Length: 553
Image (cartoon, rainbow, N blue to C red; front, side, top):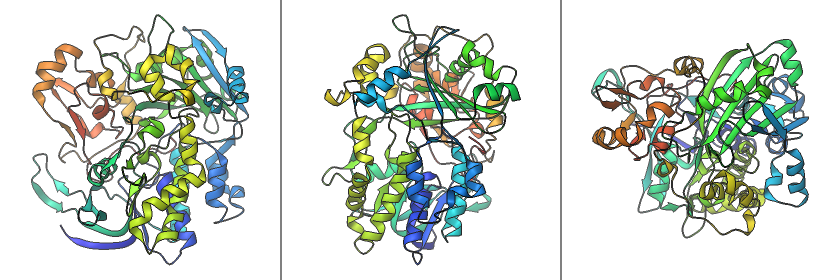
C-alpha cells in the first residue's frame, strides 16, 4: 500500500450529511484541512430520495455561510417550492382513494408519534441537485471534494482504539483479479479524524462497526425505494399542483385481511416544470418470494387516482435506493460510552440510520448530524479520542436523538405484527416494549404476491434511465458466498428471488446456476445483500466512478 495523503479531517461520502459537516467545519475553522472523498463520478450522482426537506436544518447550516442564501438563483433552482398541500391517502383497490389527513391531525393534537407525518412548509427538492449545490458551497469555502475515490476499508488501530485512515480500492484488475496495464494499487489516506457519511448500509460503516465493537439494540431494518421522474403535459402538471406532496398507503402492497401485507406506500411530488416524481417504498421484511417492488410501482401508477396526473407521460429518469428504518434501537453505539461512533470516528446521516419513519424523512437529520459533527471537531480537536462522545452529546442537544426516540417502536411494531395489526398498535409506540425483530431476509416465505401488472416491468429501460455504468472488465463486486446454496436450497424453495427483486436485473440463472451476470447494471442499492433469504450475497466496493449517475433524483 502506498501512503501519499494525510489530512486533518477525512469525510467518506459527498452526500448531504458529509457535505454539511464539511461546510460547517470549514466555516468555523478555515485553517483546517478538510477532505471529502466520494465513489461517484460527479456531485449528486449517487443521491436519490423522496426529498421533502424540513427548512430548519438547511437554515442552520447555511445562514452562517450567507444570510441571503435563500434568495440566490441556485437555491431557487434546487428548492423548487414549499409544500402547500399535503395529501395522505389510503388506496382501496384499483380505483378508490380516501384522504386520511384528519386522523394525522388528530394524532398530532394528541401528541402521538404518528402525528409527525406532516410536510406543510417543507422544501420539495431533488436530493441529487441538493447534493450538487452543497458540493459547490463546500468547494467555495475551500473544502477539497474529490469524486472518483472509493474507500474499501477503514484502518483501525486495535491497541489505541482509533482510526488512522482509510484504504482505497485497487483499480485496473481484470475479472480474474489479475493486474492489467492500468493497475493502480489503492493508496492509504491518513487522517486525524474520520467521518463516515457514505449512506445507507455503507460498506465502510459496517466494517467500522465490527472493528470498533459497536452494537445495535435491535437489527437494522430496510425499505427499498424505486422512483421515476415523469414528464407530463401542462394540464396534468397544473392539475397536480406545484406545492403538492402525496403519500399513499394501501393498494397495491397492503390490503387489510386478504393481503398482500407489505409495509410502505407510494409517493408523488412535483419536480419543476411538467415533471412529477412517482415512487414506491416497500419494507424489505416482505414475505413474498416472487415480489418485485417495480411491479408494485407499475400498479400504483395505474391506479385511477394517480393515472390522471401521469397518463401518457414519459419517464425521463429512474433509480432505486435503500432506506434505513430501524430507528433508535438500530443506531450503532459503543457499548461502554453509548457514543454513535468511537474515538476519532463518527457515523453521520444514513450511515448511522437517522431516518424518522413517523415522518418518512431523514434528510434534515442527515444535515443536523453534519452540523453536530463539525461542532464536535471544533470543540474536541485537541482530544480526538473523545470526539465520538462529544458528537453524541451534540446530537442530543440538536434534538436528533430525541426525535429518533419518538419513533423508536414504529417500524419494529409493524415488522412484528404486520401492517394490519402493527399500524394501529404503533400509535402506542412510546408505551410499548422493544420487540425482538429478525433481519429482513428471514421474513421470506414460500407465499406468492397475488397482484400482477399486465406487462412485465422493463428493468433494462429502468437501468438505462439511471445512467448506471461500470468498467466491464473489472472484478464482479457482487459476491455469492456459496453457489451451492443458490442451486440446492434457494432455487427449489424460493425460486431465486434475487432475480425478481433486484431493480437492475443483475442476477440471472445460467444453466441452472445463479450468477451476478450483469454487475455493470448495479444501482448500488444493496438490496441483494439484505434480502437474499439465505444471507448469501455480499456487496463489495467496485472501482470508483461506477454506478448510477443521477441528475434530478
